Structure formats: C-alpha cells, structure tokens
Amino acid sequence: MLWIEADSLATSLREALAPCGAIQRLEFGGSYRRGKETVGDLDVLVTSSHPDEAMDCLGGWSEVESVIARGPTKMSVRLKRGVQVDLRVVPAKCFGAAWQYFTGSKEHNVLLRGMAKDKGLKINEWGVFPAAAEIDFHDPKDSLTGSDEADVYRVLGLEWMPPELREARHELEWAARRQLPELIEVGEIQGDLHMHTTATDGSASVAEMAAAARARGLRYIAITDHSQRVSLARGLDSKRLRQQWKEIDRLNAEADDDFLILKGIECDILENGTMDLPDDVLAEADWVIASLHYGQNQPRAQITERLLFAIHHPHVWMIAHPTGRLINRRKPYDVDLEAVMTAAAEQKKFLELNASPERLDRNDVQLIAAKALGIKIVINTDAHSPAGLSMIRAGIVQARRGTLTRQDVANAHSWKALRKLAGR
Ligand SMILES: [Zn+2]
Ligand SMILES: [Zn+2]
Image (cartoon, rainbow, N blue to C red; front, side, top):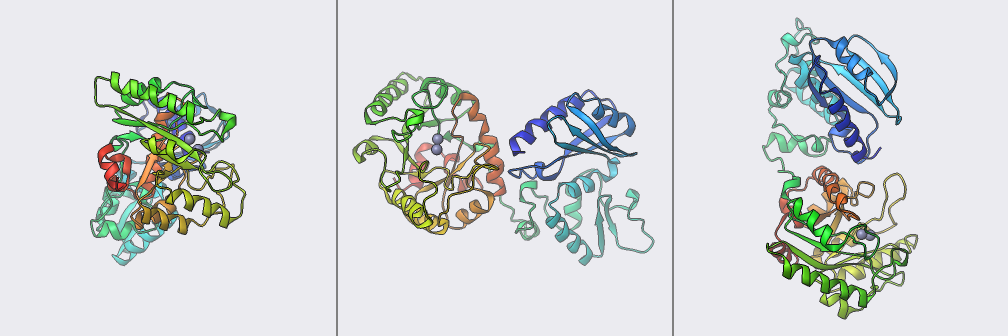
C-alpha cells in the first residue's frame, strides 16, 4: 500500500487501541516508520502488564478479518483490506532495543551489529549486551539499554537518527561525527506552488484554495491550472488564463493580510518540444511550471530534449513531477535524469517533489542526487481540492528520506527569498 494509506491505517489502529487499559505504550516500526513510499505490513510494539488482554484488544478491532497466529507475546492478524498487522508485547526495559530492531532497515541493522561487535557488544531485539560468556542475551536486566531507543545508538557512540535515514547509506558516519542533517519538517513549508481549481480539473475555486492554504498556515500559493493541451481537463488558453489572473489580482487586492496568491500556470511541454502557451503570456506569470503529460512513451533522447528545452526556457521556474511515474501503476519516462539535473543546476531551475501520494516524484535516491548538485527542490501537493493540501505530509516524509533540510527546499523560504534562489 502507499505510505499515506499505511499512515491512515496506523492512525485508526492507534485510536482503536487507545481505550485498551492493558496497553501502556504503543509505537509503530518497520517501513511505515521509515517513511518508505510503499509499505507491506504494519509492525506494532506495545508494552503491557497483561499481554493477553492487549492482544484481545487488537483481536477486537472492527477492521480485523482473521487472526493468523497468536503466541504468548506475539500476534498477527489480517485486516479486511488485506494488510497484515504484527503486534509484539515487549518488556519496558527492552522497548528501546526492540523499537530500534523492528524499525530496521535490515541493512542498517546489519551495520549496527558490526559496529557493536567491534566494540565488544552484542545487539539484538532484547537489548545491547557486553559480549561476555556469562551474559544471557535474552535477559533485559543485563542490557545496557532501556525503554529509550536513543540508548541503542548512544552505547554505540552514535547520535539518535530519524528513522527515514536508516537505509545503510551514510547515516552511521554522520551520526558518529554528530553531523546528521536537520531534516525538513511540515511546519517549515511556507508556500505551495502547484494546485488546480475549478477552472480546470480541481474541485474548488481560487478563493477556496487560498482560504484553505491560509488556514494551514501557508504564506503564499501559486494557482497552476493546466494549459490548453490538457483538453480533458479543459486546460486554459491565453484568454481564460488572463481572466483567472484578473481574479487573482482582485483577491490579492482585497486581502487584509500579506498572504499572496501567485499567478501561475502548469504549462505542458508539447510532444514537438515547444511550450503550450505563447512566450508573451508566460512572461506575465509570477510562476511557471513545465510538465510533460503527453508523449510519455517517446524515446529517451526526445523526452530528454523536451525537458531540457523547458529548463532553458527563460520563463520556466520549475519542472513538475520530473519522471512522471505513478507508484504501482506507471513507470517513469525513459529520460536522461543526469542531463536534466545538470541543466537544472546550471540554469537555477527548481525540480519538484510532487507530494501527491501516488506520485512522490522524485524518489528519495533522486533527491539525494539533486541535493549533491545544489538543486533546490520545491515540495508541492498538486492539490485538486482543499483537502489535497494536507498531502504535503507525504512529500515531507519522502523529502526527509532524501536527506533534505530547510536549506534544500525552496518553498521552505519566503516568496522573496525563493525568487533570490532562482536568481530573479
Ligand atoms: Zn501535472
Ligand atoms: Zn498539476
């Protein structure tokens, strides 16, 4: 399932088990906690003075279809929507080690085990132990760790690290040197620069989208409806676009705060490699994003050329959903991402991290590569409704997996500062 689906299941499960008196603490582990874009099953750890009652509470949840297995401290159930939930009841003294262990990743844990060995320690789901003959590695009383997950890292001489980083990349080096990146957080996002309205395929007006963004604490948004090529969504021609911009001018003039609605457009890069709207129209926009929606099966050289043309176009600020993939549904286009990134870095153009949960485009590894080139990323929701603005969370989780900090994210800055980043 998509991360956002796992997240909503996890939230419901937490709510369902909240009244369960037998459960003292409940946390999720696994790939869900690490924020992977897709999640298999849900791993739940609890502490409980009455493990049997705790498991009864899970068994009684209305979403449970069947119990797959049940032992003294472990239970697996299948939910009606086909997902498996594994619940483990863990002694409080083991909780830190168990939570770390069941969060993974496997590869991260292998590296940790090696580090522990080098220090004369043994690490497992029960704790971190001196690797001495007389020690029982399953008896938490001999463990150097307690209920706090950070203990595990501390005894190994490491800083605690956010789960999104635990993929056996560079996190252990960083944690040893106290140089972990300060990963971006939802609250740092100041603007959303990709959204649609009823003018094309959105379900709310400009004013309604602006009100929803204001209510979420944003300082600015760009309205970026589709251009005319996207006829299915009644894409805008120059005339309708200019009408929308008049409405935006009026809304900005009427506003009694400094919230800003930017006049934008999501302009298609046509199959023949040109932009879908004339330059004089694009020149009047505050913010132009270029997208490829058609001709996605063209050969690599042609797709790459279309994107490079857009990147070099003087009025284009950002390439939206740069690979076009839809998770579990559509492969990315065949494109030379190296060439696209090199050009974007050179031209000071932004690349999008589209937070729409089935896109999450670009992925974590591509974000790391972009960051290394100094490319600034814009995390946008591509919302088609006010509720769609909340999907920013999925994008933030992906950005954190991509090691992005506030510095790397253009829309974690004010509109004025963002313009500077673009060299405008
Ligand atoms: Zn699009
Ligand atoms: Zn869009």
